[in-house]
Structures are given as C-alpha cells and as structure tokens.
Length: 237
Image (cartoon, rainbow, N blue to C red):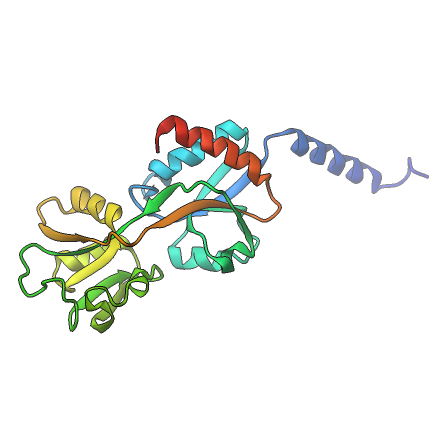
C-alpha cells in the first residue's frame, strides 16, 4: 500500500528539506531603523553600516547564526513588535509593554543621550522654550520625558517623520529649537550641514539604554548575552 501511495514522495521530500534546514545555519530576520551613526541605511546600496550594525554582525559570526537586517520606518517598527513578522529588533528601548513580547539582552548596544539644539547666538532663546516652536521626531517622545525642563511643556511641539527632516527644519529656521539624540544630531551636523552653527544644551539628567531583543522563545538569550559581553568588552563599545 505504501509503495502505491502518491503522497509518500511528497512527505519524504518535506522530511529531507526539514533535515537540511535543521543542519544548516539558523536564520533570524532582525528589524531596525535608520538612526545614524548607530545604524545608517544607504538607500542606493540597500545596506546598513554603523556601530550597532558592527555589533550585530560580530554577534552573528560569534553565535554562528545568520541575521538578516531589515530597514523599517520607526513608526512601523513599533507596530511590528506584537506581530510575528520579525525575529528580533535592535537599538530598542526597554519598556514593560514591549517585554510582553520580547526577550531583551542585558547589555545595551548603545546609550542614547539627548540635547537641545538651537541656531547659534539666538539671544531670545536663553533656554526658555515657552512660546517657542520646538521640533521632535514623531514617535520618539523625548520631550515627554523632560516636560518641565526649560519650560518645554509650554512650547509648541512640531513632529517630523525622520531625524534628517527634523534637523533640516532647524537649518531652515522652521523651528526655534529641536530636541533629539545628541550623537545623531552631531552626526547630521557634521555630514550634512557642516557650515551651520548651533548652540547645544546637553540634558545630563537623561539617558536611555537601547538593546537587541528577540521574540520570546526564539533563542537562548543567556547565550546571546555571553557572546555580546565578549564583543562589547573586546571592542570597548
């Protein structure tokens, strides 16, 4: 009966493919967003570079796994966390509502520090942002974490879809000031607007570690932590 069963070859083929996959390299699809200089996406080449990318690539080699990195707009990335479309995310803040779905590593890929940027010599600013137009990245709510600082809660907040556009609005004087990652803003200033002069006020009271996080149950997170600690220690990142 088995010899004449037309389904048998299909079953055998499926088992052969499954065995091949099991013996091959494990693959994980990991989402992040354009966030230079930590993760810089080149639209023309469709590749990522940056310090966080270097960490993920080193981890991939160390764990002998294949990590495919996918670029998503930040707004979409956040909506994907409860879904099952991606195995991991990185450069991601750790919050309880995300930990319902994700196992976070214990070692951050980097620590975000923020600053207020305004055109150089704006005497009217005087770090009093009340009645000023302040730009922020849509979906990255730094301004909500420091509402009373420099009367930010009395400012008019304008939200922009990317950090590149946010900084461009400052250069074009469409906003009086912006609140954003200090490192990202300094990178954009150096690479895109080298002749633009700014006053920078560092928010020393704010730090946000960001991490690599895997969907629950997809990987041994303790093993990832062990290798990640080796990489970070060796590179002094």
